[in-house]
Length: 67
Image (cartoon, rainbow, N blue to C red; front, side, top):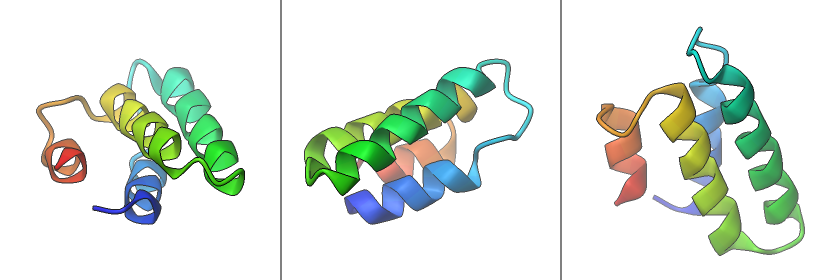
């Protein structure tokens, strides 16, 4: 998955009632800022962090994005 797709997926999974929702939101905000600054590798990592907080590493969306 490319950086754009991971950011979109992280945004889709935001505000799902996760216990760590504020952390997921902060990571996604960081990812968007990094993407806008051209740091695509770091942006993808922060978007993955957002997914970790919103759905967890065992969720299918995270596994698909982490490939």
